[in-house]
Structure formats: structure tokens, C-alpha cells
Length: 470
Image (tube, rainbow, N blue to C red; front, side, top):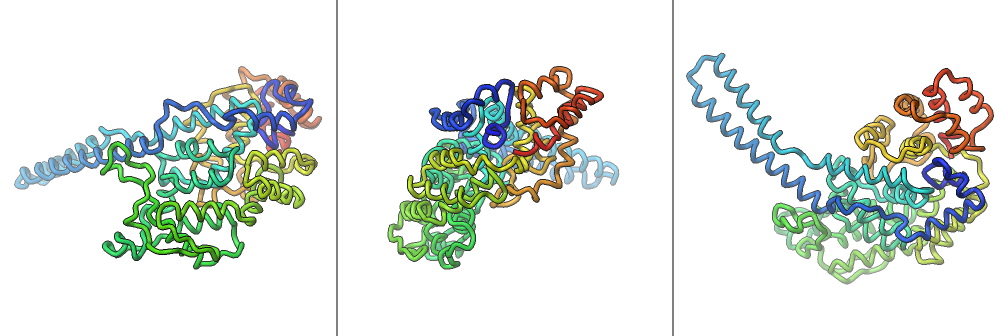
């Protein structure tokens, strides 16, 4: 149960390695230094990736403009030619423009796939994968979308999420909300105080997106007492939080900066408290207070318990995790430890339907493979309705069965495709005996034994309730 409910799924030998003390093994993983970190020195920072994509777009646009000018000049030269010749010139001009723009490849997809490959390798290579599951949870809680900022999507997770998932919630909150990817995703870069220097000169004003999502999704949760006035006050506090334009700063473009010209002057009130400081510290002070709020503790504990344990987690477990959060000042390692040491986290049946990403990783791990093609993997995730780093809204991907149950039919196609590729090197009976062990019911063992081929047997195994639930 430990490997399914809290980890990335069993792989050859993993059940035997932890069966004497599964709770202790989970705690030991959390205590391992840099448990949630990955080796990614070859990958660019989010700002560097953003600059590279911006530069490529600028070069592509320049080439397209040049090609368009050449096309227009050719049309003028052939103005007196026949209609047939004019059509031929126009087609040639459009082809030249298209060729010019294609001459500068978009590095964004390469960055995306390289980041995906590192993430997949971490999930497949983890002994248990508890820390990695926590990364996935927090990355979804503080989600951004590659549909809007693809160049930064993977680096955001590496830079803002991974260093803090076993630290303090305050640090995680400050890292995510101040990250350029989050600022760009939630339109904070276009927000300016109505009475700021820039707001007056440009007759533009406030964008409430970041402030609202922090209150509603990232900290307090819905219906917890904050008002529209609090949203406005907090949005004013956050004015000035932006990123350096890459076109103006080729060395540091895409990095966070606080621009006082955008910042709304004067004290601001949020949740009944006045914040006077007009520098970047004004926003950080509000975030620190939100991180320590009792409603935040309850919201975080409930979401964690729902993600790992059950769609409707035991109230006593949520209360215990909430208390741990408050007693430790938001120590996320202690909150996770409290969860796995609570009997309520283990007593329920494996009724939680795995999300597509968890199921696919579990399937690959069960075969003993340690690598996966990132393009094929991300295409499969999109087919299953959970495209990597592309949630449908700032709420992230849902975490209840009703949101995913209708997609289980598509899992059959993915399981068939995967089983066809690995059937020659993976024996389903070995998977049952050395990987899944007692987790497989007699009925599933019997069905696998009667299968007409290894491929069919593997599909039956991967589509079984024992494998799809945790």
C-alpha cells in the first residue's frame, strides 16, 4: 500500500525492501538530504529559457518582415505582367516568407521536452517516490500553464517548487508567487496601481488575478472570510512585482524585479491589517501573514489528505495535519510525516483513483524500465486529459474520481500500446510475483494466467482495479 498510496508505484524488489517497516521507509525518504531535488545542471534557468524563446521570436519576426518586403517589391516589379505570372510571383513570395520564418527554430518545445525528461526520470528512478509525489502535488497546487509560458514551465517547478516542498510553507509561497512564470501566467506583469507613476502616465490600472488566486487557491481557500476589498487591497500591494523585459535586458531579462513606478503608493489594508511599507517587502509581509493563517493550514491539510488518502479524507486526519502545520510554523516535512504516521492514512481501502500521470508512471515502473521517451510520454498524457504542466485553469488539475473516471476507457488504448512495446522483454508473471506481490487479487492472477498473449496479460494487469487505485 505504501508504494501505491504514497509513492510512485512498486518496481522490481521495492515491496521486499520496505515491507518490514513501510512507514519508517517513507519517513526515511523525507529525511534524505535534497530528497526532492534533481540533477539538472545542463538545463537553462527559467529566465535564460525565456530570453532564448523571446530572441527566437524576434528573429523570426524580423525574417518574416524582410521576406514580406521582398515579396511586395516583386509584386511591384511584376505589376504589368500577366495575371498568371502575378499569381506565380505571389505564391513564390509567400513561400519565401514561410521559409524565412522556419529558418529560426522555436527552442521552447526543446526546453519543454528536456524538462519533461528530467521529471520523468526522477519519478521512474525514485526508490519509493514519496518526495516526488509531494513535488507533483505542490506543482499542481501552485500551477502555471505551459500553454501560456512554455519556456518557463519546467524550470519553474525546479526553481520554485522542488527546493521548498520539505521546508516551510512560507518559503514555498514566497518562491512561487514571486517567480516570473507565476507573474506572467496570472497577468501580474500588466498590473499597475491607478495612482502609481506608470498608472497615471499610461491610464492603465489594476489586475486582480494574482491576488485573488493567492487568497482563494494558494492560501486561505474559498469562503474563508476575505472580501472583494481584501482582493483589491492585496492587488495594490502586489503592484510593482514584475519581470525584466528581455528585449531591454539581454543579460537579466525574464528575472523578477520590483518596479516602484508601477506600485500603488500608500498603506493598504488586507484582512483588517494595514501594511505601510511601500517596497517589495509590503507584498512579502502579506504573504507571510497568509502563510500563518489558520484557514491556510486547514486548506493545505485538506488538499494533501485528499490527494494522498481519499476524495473525502477522514476529518480526524485533516485535523491532526492542520495542527501539525500550525504547531510547526508550516513545516511541510512535519505535516507529511504526521500524515503517514496516522493510522487513518492506512486504514481505508485503496479506493482513490490514480490520476493519469500516476497510473502511467506506475505502469512503466512495474516493468522495471527506467527511461521513457518524453515526446511519447507527454503526448500520452495529453490523450489521457492531463497534459504535462497544462492545467485547465489556475485551480490546477482536479483531484476527485468523478473528474477522471470517464477517461479510464482511453487508458486501455495507452495500456495496449505500451504492452505491445514491452511484451517481448517483460513477463507478466514476474511482474505479479516480484513487483506487485500480494496486491494482486486471485481473480486478476487467474485472468492473467488465461491470457492469450503476454501483451493481453499485461493489459489485464495494468487495467485492474488493484493497479488503477491506491
